[in-house]
Length: 71
Image 1 (cartoon, one colour):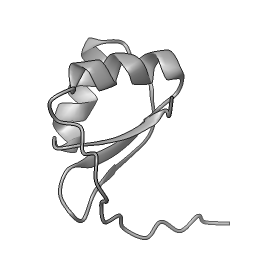
Image 2 (image 1 turned 60 degrees about the vertical axis):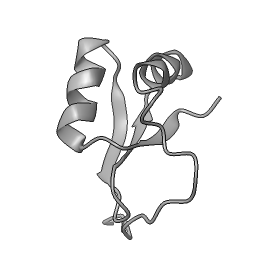
Image 3 (image 1 turned 30 degrees about the vertical axis):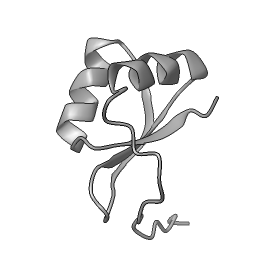
Image 4 (image 1 turned 60 degrees about the horizontal axis):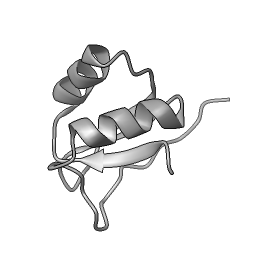
């Protein structure tokens, strides 16, 4: 299962839910199409958060912002 998911919650809500479940975030971004994309450090954390947000998972396509790595 993927460590990444898109949810219909804002970054603050996602960060709080991850903290509540002691799930470590690897990357997080606000989606241009609404909601948040979050990548967890491991599959177990991802499964926990996926279950916590089970009614807020976005299953269709989303619009992401361009991310450019420095260096």
